[in-house]
Image (cartoon, rainbow, N blue to C red; front, side):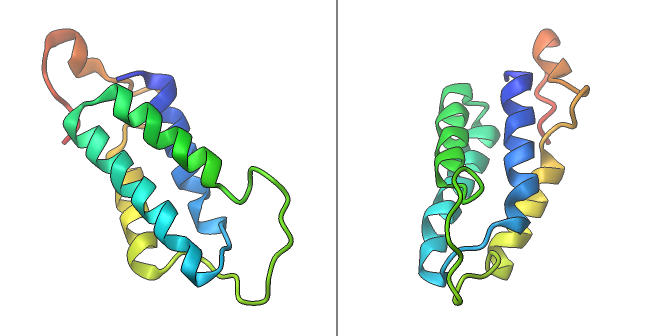
Length: 107
């Protein structure tokens, strides 16, 4: 998989804990996180690119938005899922060394 794309995914997920949204708005980012995880698990670079783009568009950090009193952090199950996914993705510099020799080093 594309190392720059994986790095961008890690950046977005790393910022996830700073997102503040209304409780009802968390379903779309949750779906994007699950799509990202599924794409990574499947080794599907095209689907990963789409999932990363979805997260970028959904990010409240993308545009300045007026915070509402009911806005809050990600729900705990989603926050835990994101944390686990960040630790699953390769660190910058680790790359995807297994691709060159045919080994799948995602797990």
